[in-house]
Length: 321
Image 1 (cartoon, rainbow, N blue to C red):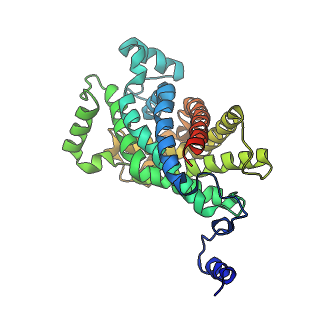
Image 2: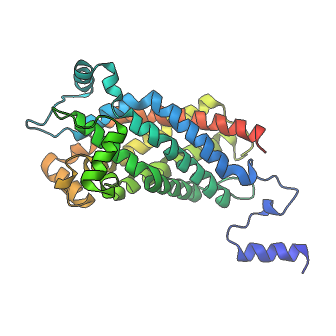
Image 3: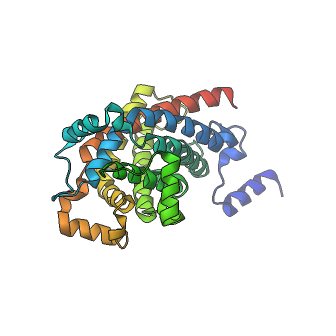
């Protein structure tokens, strides 16, 4: 069988066949077989830098979501009140309570997210290196599910418990490792894996929306030419749009996830029970608690993340063939 027939036969049998794999006249996507590894490294570096910049808004968002609608347990009247009371009680760095948890987790989270996306993308691009709209959603969804399982759920659970612990009159967690030790001792390994279903829903929808918007905006800017560079400020603007879209698309899921991972999660039987109780006791508007601080954080977060990530990938593609 000649080479031409072998290629045709492979294309028929292999759903991931791409002409650039065999046709020396067509350019392979940048990065070749190292794309996934580059994505992991660039993503990890990006995650560490990004969280140090944006954490205070995440802290305020989580505090407002944990605040009950009424009664003695309600502590804050809004964003400004939350910031003011936190700084008054714990100083400016009180807004960074729980940062160590996210810092330890953001590096692997971002590494898994971008590494998975690049791996999925490499298998799904067409002969020119472009993703179809359906594949943009699918690759983003896959990346979100991977990060939810391997990084986000334990990280977010510990973070929420740390912030929730500070709300008590006598906080018991003295630091990251002490807190994790207490959680595992009291609740077992399951204690750091609460809210897995809600987290998968949140991260899967998050990344499906973000990568779809980002890839669509980039494709529009490039006019379908994947080799055309996109200026970093333009990437940042596209990232802000992608972040805003994901906030409005899945904040209700984020509220449920936060409640399921708090210190009072035991009062909910499961994710659906949590959703129904919030709806019954606090009304539908409760599902958009913390939207403004989350919107500001996520837009900044996604803009910075994609700008930093693209910069590192650009560098890696130059020095790492």
